[in-house]
Image 1 (cartoon, helix red, strand yellow):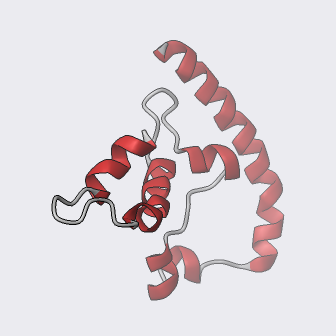
Image 2 (cartoon, rainbow, N blue to C red; image 1 turned 180 degrees about the vertical axis):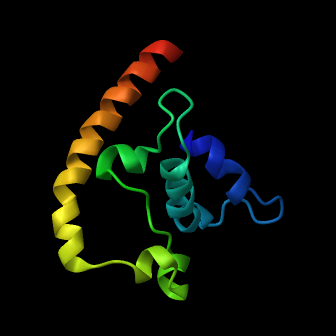
Image 3 (cartoon, one colour; image 1 turned 90 degrees about the vertical axis):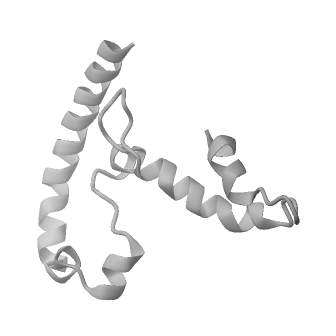
Length: 100
């Protein structure tokens, strides 16, 4: 999948590949990690970290999710998030089995 996504980004008829692979790879990996799986319904990022990713533009422009962040509240909700993550992983496992 990485190669399928990378090829259209780096191919240039006049200047083939020219080291653009290294520049484009992080973007391709980010997009693959943020795309929900058809089998599970969740993104790979969510399955690992238990929350939605905050994109860099949210940090730059102060999105409501970033402004509402509270360090003390984050520590308190971490335990709840871990419980929800276990439940989401179970749901993803069931969806994947059903998909296959």
